[in-house]
Image (cartoon, rainbow over all chains, first blue to last red):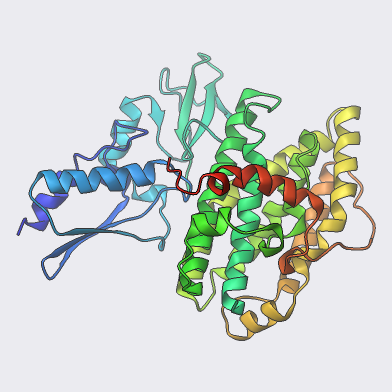
Length: 148
Length: 249
């Protein structure tokens, strides 16, 4: 049987299909990895209930496990407790920042010039989890992962 | 059909019908940011509808999954509230309809998080977080349109007055509601009337809009008695899977 630690390591390499700079473990959507007898169970939670990435992520996880010799695996979707952006890991936040996507926080600094003179242009963005912002100092438009 | 299935269908159908309405506005919004927002709200509601309908199908135990329920039922089998089947109209109508629904949905889901049915509580917990964002946006827009130009004010007022008679149904309980509340699965819809009215009145006042007076309240959607509008909506939504049931995409 492949060890849990090894499985977690594999899951680190499953990218979010819409924000490929982060992995699914970075986002905190992998809630549990355990064995039920010889059946591996991977518990995932969706970020948003209508997020189109959810199905793709399930498929990617299955493919990744199978490619590494895990034949008996079950993916379980768990809704409660509901996903929160607090579960995005430190590394996930750093990776988002590097890609110019501002992680959730008390302030929304511009990813280009660090100015906090930024404002929301729309509550929603290119994916369900983001909002559109603009920097009033350097005029850079950017995306912000809204706290949920 | 059991009260339990009926009850879950009501929430699923309301989310589904509104999601379908909003999807019809994609690429027709007044500005790009709103187009993105409308698509996102629609997507959230489709996601919520899938969770509700999927569960309704499991409870029913007759082999109907979410797609079967969405695409292979006629209007009289839908249990959505009448408010969400009102046509999109202009941007003011879309906004006011969205606001009335979002506020009710947010309050209703809050009650459902306390459900003894853990699946319902989980769906409500998930959906409520998303709905909080929908509400924030629709309330902002209500105020911007009402307290905007003469034209936007007039349109927002007209929309509020036209849609008001469809708000009463949100708080009207029937045998299904009573039964579900008794079992601790659901809640008495009357409980959200005052909190809804209080916040809606405040928002309308901030938007410099008159609160429509008492009027006859339309109802029947929850029992499957719908307006003509739902038939057209379903015809468009269902035509492909009904014509080509084997189609996959």
